[in-house]
Length: 294
Image 1 (cartoon, rainbow, N blue to C red):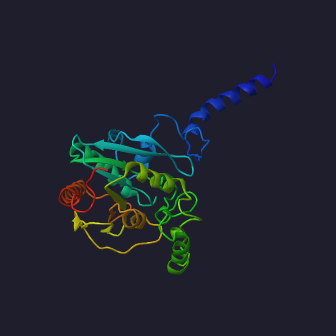
Image 2 (tube, one colour):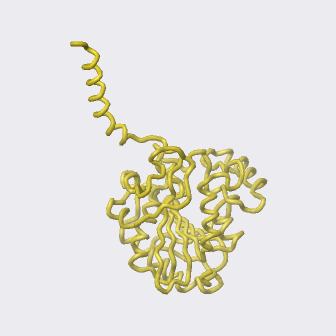
Image 3 (cartoon, rainbow, N blue to C red):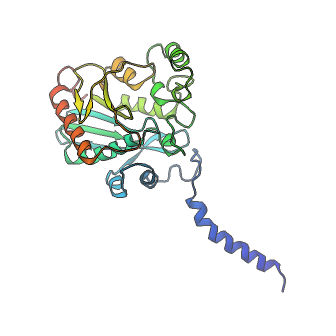
């Protein structure tokens, strides 16, 4: 009997055995990648394997929805709206702007659960991971896939002059803090910028790590503490979200710096931070800090 059919059959068996394994293997998700935008696929499989203190049930319960936003590598940016029946405030919560601050995305997911239980009088919009490419890199990295620090890429006044000088002289060209070639050069920062225009938040909460404190930019009285994190305003940086949103656009920005980038706070601590945030919002957001439901 001729050998060729047997060899062909063996190749077919080998291909059938390898196909599932190849489908599960990590691949770059560029815009043309078949897994980049599969409707209904969601990020939970990747996130649960990556994020500390995040279970499949927690991520699934978050009911994340795809947005029009895409990362450099084509990953979908996800969000979740939680709207109180008497919503008067709009609050935008952003996690994992820096991809190596894994705990920030975890806290955002836990807070989605809190919001569904106690939405207060707010329309909450959560973006748990603004920088999914940095988050899913091995190892995780602060910058996006083009090496840009998204938190230096917003169009603050005199960006072209100040961002370049700050990066060159103050950071000594630290690659982790490269502001990029121009403001909003990155699809992730451009998406958040456009989302701020669409949503018109009365408050932005930007979650970071690992300095263990609170920062605040913009009008009004800042929160003195959230849980065990106390206010310690560190100034503004060219191209930062706090500078752009809080100082330039008048949208107050509370920046949370968790104590660890890799360890999520305990459930009790995340709950206390949430309670403190709601209390401060109810006391202060209507006093010179918006509160108009714009």
